[in-house]
Each structure stands twice: as structure tokens, then as C-alpha cells.
Image 1 (cartoon, helix red, strand yellow):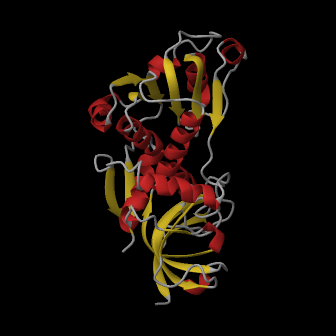
Image 2 (spheres, helix red, strand yellow; image 1 turned 90 degrees about the vertical axis):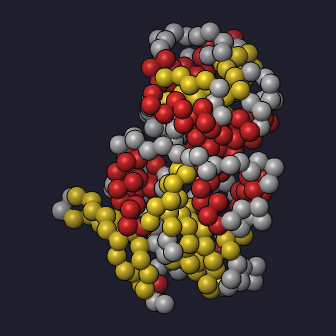
Image 3 (cartoon, one colour; image 1 turned 135 degrees about the vertical axis):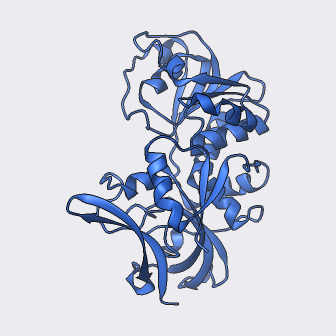
Length: 328
């Protein structure tokens, strides 16, 4: 097979268009491993790439998709052989390298992980970058001292990919989870994932001008950034931590040193894109075994032809949970 289907984003007269096209394998960039993609997933970064955001993707036409799971078809390295089931997340996949919204990718061997034994290819893409990020956030919080029973753990942006998986994963591990969302109609969805309480975005935006707020959270996973993040920092309990991994509410916030020097709180940055492959492998093993979580409540399966509509949905802020893309 020399041709394959892919979502192609093109710039035409200053406007960005998306359509499913046929591409040739020999059009893919050089790389040590050719992978037939069976599953991908839709992330906010994919939607930015698919709408012409130059901070994510510099050159068009382009195929987004920062996640891919499939089978090795050709390899130039001995540790990966045809038939191996593998996953690729992050690095430059889907940003400036053709990504998982195509039925084939060709990438460096240093980006490729063999599928963890406890997950199917499809399950790995229900998690995808969102699940990997949620896992890294929880791991960092636990390394900073979070234990089950310590008190309420806040998750902001809780209906999104990272947020919804974090809610489910934390609840499964015995934490009291408070979910923050701007979607009041999704409270039952979040409680179904394990949240004991659902609060509004407006509540977390209150008190922006104050240096400190009442101590409330034993820990937090923040997926939105902006002033909401600083309100989270200001309302952490003494010596507590927040893991920061997103910026949908903004890349900047008004800050003061008071929470840090008076309450000894910690702001922990989390990146899943450039994590060393060995660190990714360790987290994927954990996600597939002791941290394996039932995510059936938050996932939906879509096809390549349905992908463009779902990109519009996520850009509009109306997406909940995870969309897993069937490229079969």
C-alpha cells in the first residue's frame, strides 16, 4: 500500500481548511520507523494545529495528531521489528512532523514505545497525551507529599481530557476530588467519574485581587492556568502543591510571593511532550497496571471523517472527555 488517508490542514488565501485526502508514504519525512496507525486521539493542541496556530505548527499543509498507536511496518533499528505494537506521544509528532491523524507516520526510533502489556492499542489512545499528563501530575503531587486522605484535591478544567482523566484516576486512588468546570450541565458526568463535589469556574475566579485566600486544598491539578491558577495557589493548605500543565485560561497570571513564603506552597510544572522516553515508559507501565482506570464514561470513538467537526467542538470549548480516533 503506497497511499493512505490523512487529515490535511492547508492554508488557502489566508484561511485554513481541513479535508481528508490520500497521501503517499514516500511523502512522509525520513525516519527510522514506519508505523501503520490504528488509533489516535484528539487533544487541544491538535485543534490549535488544525486551525493554523503558528505557535504549534509552523508550516502548512500539515497533518496534526500528537498521539498515535499502531503497528510497525518497517524499521531500521533492531529493537523495533515489523509487527510490534507501539505508541508515540509528544516530541514533534503532529506539531511539525506529520502526526497521528494519518494512517501512516514515519518517526525517529527514539520517539517510539512498545505497547504496555496492560493496555490495548485503543485503550492507550483513550489515555494518550492527556492520560500521560494526568499521570505525571499525580506522580509529582505524590512525590511532593500527597497521600490519600490528606484532604480535598482540586482539579480545574475537569471536563477536558487531562482534567477528566485526573478526576477518575485520583478518585480511584482514594482521594477526595473536587472538580472545577465552566460547564454546569456536566456536574453529573463529573460525579460519575468520582468527583465528590463540583464547583463553578466563577467561584475559582473570585478573589483575584487578594494576596491570600482561605486554606482549602490539600493539592491540585491545574489544567487552565491564568488567574485561576494563582487563586488555586492562594488557597492551598500549608505545604501543599499544585501541578500545572495547561493554559486554556491564559499563559499569565497576577502573582505575589505571599503563598510561597507564608504557607510554603509549591507550584510544580508538568510537561509530557519532551519527557525522556524512559520516563514516559515508566509512567505508561504504571497507567497500564497499578493505575489502570476505567475510562469508559468519558470516551467516545470517532472516525477520520468526523474529526473536523470535533476539532470545531474542542475549539469552541464544548468538548467533554476524550475522543479516540479510529483510523482503521
